[in-house]
Length: 132
Image 1 (cartoon, rainbow, N blue to C red):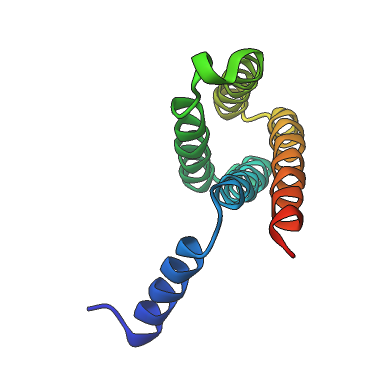
Image 2: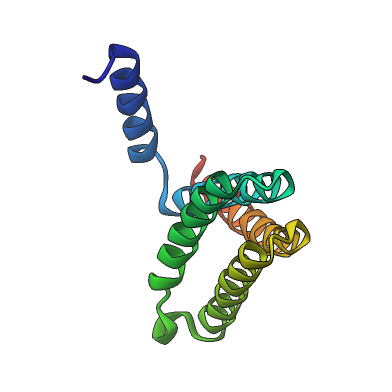
């Protein structure tokens, strides 16, 4: 049975998602991927395989979703570059996980943080332009 606190949290999250612009939603996906990458790195440092596996699975799901939504025809070189970065991040996640190498998670964090910062800046510009 779901508690009332859990239901309230779910309603809040759904309302928050519905009130965001598409650009803000993409930035939120990056935030989640970054959070789970940090969790994976920390779990690898502790040699906590189940926690690392769960966190890596979440990052893979988010990055794979971002990658699957790329439109190379409309996005051109930018979409191709993003595809390469996502592929790099996924490859590095797998390598870091297999080798239990926390430093490789930092490579993923660098890519995701840079991309998140870019999307956040774009979302902010869009918000500023929409404000009278």
